[in-house]
Length: 235
Image 1 (cartoon, rainbow, N blue to C red):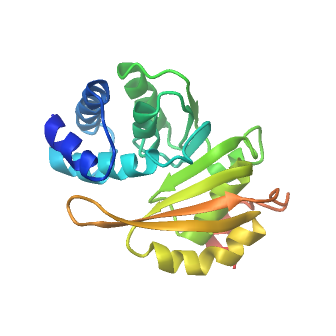
Image 2 (tube, rainbow, N blue to C red; image 1 turned 180 degrees about the vertical axis):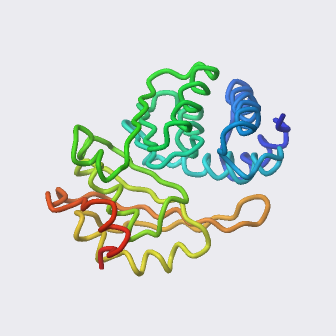
Image 3 (cartoon, rainbow, N blue to C red; image 1 turned 30 degrees about the vertical axis):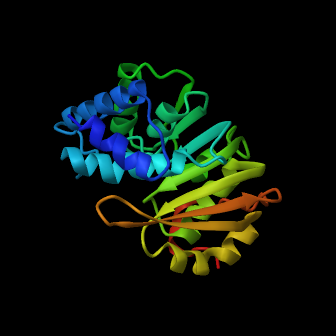
């Protein structure tokens, strides 16, 4: 399906080393994704190099960060990016894939079984509801890719992160503008911006990884219900 040598070379150019076993699992993941996508809409990207660049390299640049360790929740994971790729790269991660759409959760269960991944939990939940249950401040790391604008995304993710943990948003070229609009919201939720990494994918697309530390407990006022979060993002 994918060109494993080509993917390995692209990752090596970014300082990310992939083993043969990782490459085999990523190849299998791509096959499963394209096969399942014929019956359930998971991704618009189905060509091999598009999957390599926009799904795998993108996710691996996140997964290779030293902060990605311990208990990770991937919020609104969709087809499993970046969470499943992170688990392939760092098998020791305790991964929770959080996704409200049942058909996508069915795919995630199936593909993790096909890939032989263990230590994965599947949460068919909206993040703002999960954070009012057993998942509140339960994770070392929360991540999300292409889910919502950063002021909204922060309210979904930061309540899930324990004090001392991190929230990492995978954003496109406008990430720094979103951060400027979200800094007050991040502070209200117990977070503090720490670092922004600007990256370029092999195809030329720009990416921003925005890393926020959780420095204090999130007020029980947050998260609000989904309608309020969407209509009146925190400022």
